[in-house]
Amino acid sequence: MLLYPILNSVKGFFESQCNSTSESSKGKKENMETIPCLKIIHTTCHTEFGGLEKRIFNESSWMAEKGHDIIIAAPGNTPLYNKAMEKGFITHDVKFKRSGIVKDFLALRKLIRNFKPHVLNTHGNEDTKIALSAAMGTGIPLKILSRHISAHVGLSLHNILLYRHLCDYVFTTADYTTRRLIQTLGLPGDRVQTLSSGIIPPKGLVEKNQARESLAREFALDPSTRFIGFVGRVSPDKGVDLILRAFHRVAAQIPHHLAVIGTGTGEYLESLRTLAKDLNMESRVHFTGFREEVWPYYRALDCKMLASRDINGIPFEGIPQSILEAMYAECPVIGSMSGGIPDIIRHGDTGLLFRADDEADLSEKLLQTLHEDAASRIRVEKAFRKVKGHHTIDAMGNKILGIYRNFLADPESVFRRPME
Image (cartoon, rainbow, N blue to C red; front, side):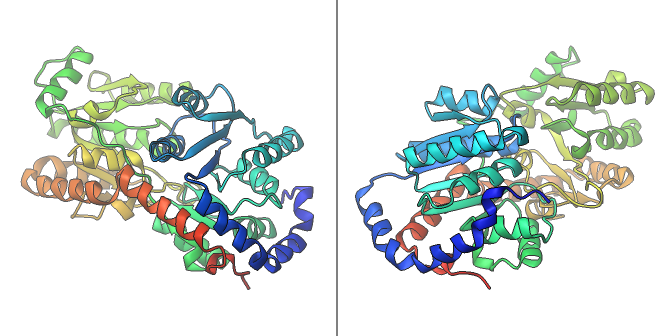
């Protein structure tokens, strides 16, 4: 168990904070009355630009448009860091490496004291440990630990300190994760909030036939070619190899080609190309690489599949943005029964679910989606309405902003009471 030296005194610090709550409440309320905007720091140790980083960037952009000040503390020269700089956010290069714990701790503590934020929101394992420790005693009114994956959090002194004492609130992206945290760590239900990432709807969506023809041209195929596919981070945990094998099982029964939109490690991508060759499917499996604009690809697909699998028997997936985006783009969806996927895909209602790691079950659900056109259209319509009504960036942003304001206006609320 890794415990930073600064955490050794957390028990006494927490008790003193609880005793001084009433003295600090007046000052915090006065601050909220005089400051017209919120100052928000987001931290992450991640270096890619997947769902987690997209969530941070989109949420920050929305808050900035509402007049709030944003600072991003993340490893420099990474996609999120660079996008944040281009957007005009204050950025701070923090590596969040174990070898630089002391340096990062001191840098964040200085940043916090200078910026004087109302909110600190951490998003990754390493940055959470360092940032929440650095925030101790600095007077940040609201400290949030965001948990983006469904991987289990074990009952340990370290996790009790992080989740029960060093943060005020825990945000998750799936009900599955919320339930596990409550059960494992004994967190009060009102201390944990499920907030799936809100998508940013496009200004317009290309017509489906036009999107299909464009994708066919990209692969130098006949304009009438039909597609099914995957959109997102191409990795083993997303089960792209399972999708390819499931497609192979039914390829003789459908005319479709399989499109893999996204990128991943060279080793895994090469293994997928080898698999396609071994299955004699090279001519019907296509890889686009990374694409910044993915909406036309959702529109081009007759089905979007996500085969996320459990890691060592433990799910990792929250509510994937790629599923929400596909639903908004009116693309039929199939997902595995893993993590938070069933939170958004209600089987037979907004899409179809299959047993994780079961390629035969996935292939059956694929045929059902493609062959039962009327039923698929009904599911597509329900999925679109669900996402439009509850999972856009506006819906997510307003929920979060409401939590911020309610908490900061009432620092003696239930979230400030010490937990047994």
